[in-house]
Image 1 (cartoon, rainbow, N blue to C red):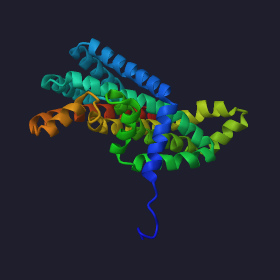
Image 2: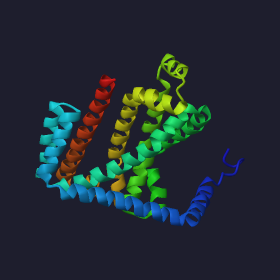
Image 3: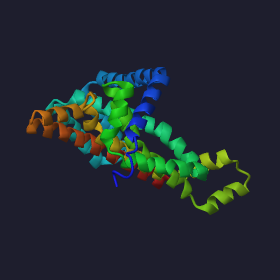
Image 4: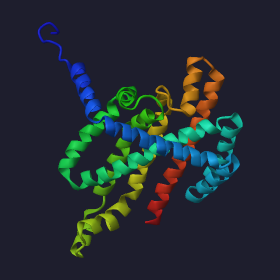
Length: 281
């Protein structure tokens, strides 16, 4: 079959397209890179300004308020362990990278999900793109990210955004569309506009599902930490990657344990936050 049909030059097409993007939107890519660096550096500076013991107490109180006493206790012990093992600064770098990626995912993903939930044509376009984003190996995202943004924390954030955004969009669409039809019809019968119906009825009822999507985006962003370290992103992923390349099993386990602690804290807090929102409604 290979002799009968010539190979399609897909790689050449992609290379030509990337070259065109680079030459056409170089200024835009530079602006995005500088903006993301400022965001991540600002988050790291804010986190680093707070002494570790105060940071731990604040996170414990947040976990107690938004989740429960068990999660608060785990947060206290877990963050103390991270500090004790000497991974506090890398943990802050990782937290800044993950929060930056998740904030961007929310800013882009939630409005896009709302739009797709209201317009079937948009949904038919968005869903196949999300399928492509989720099935493409995460390593592949690093190639254009490096090409457009060089190495460092920025390509790590960009790759994390692409990899972690689909759940936020999907579950926003699902949450809004699962609002009972009789409720939306009753709202319309009272003369509510589309914006009023969306903001006062559909979004509040869909919030638990949207929070579940944000929770999944946080977990996916954390799973990109080690991969992002391959392109120079700082944080716990860099320690894991360095330990793997140097076959330092103990050090790799410690850094991996710190990632697990951060993941569990963020996961449980956002899960319980979504549950409390649902209970409150």
